[in-house]
Image (cartoon, rainbow, N blue to C red; front, side, top):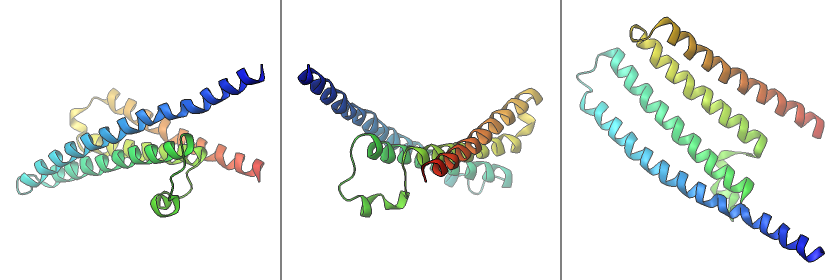
Length: 166
């Protein structure tokens, strides 16, 4: 019976390597998104003398939004791999720029990134307010506030958990 238990435990522990498929898929998605970013950047560069101030601000916000999404993908890839699959061999040199990313701090950083992305999207909407109904503006604002409240609550819960552990 003990050998069956050991076999089940090995299978379960080895199954974490299946996650590598997802992380490699995110690497491919990041590469595709980089091509999309270059296309957007090219459109902005081609229209630099055509766009008025508002259009240029919207275009820049679109590029900033893309950079935040790409950073979020990278953060999830690296932290997810390190937390759930395997530690990086040279973690101090390679991923120290991310700081401490245990599962709790990863949730907070992801939530903060989502709030930042949502903020930029909402700013883009408000700069084109004439294209939206009042109801749509209300729902977009409420969704953004839900992201903000969620991020604050995650931070608060992480702080409580840190005090309970320490």
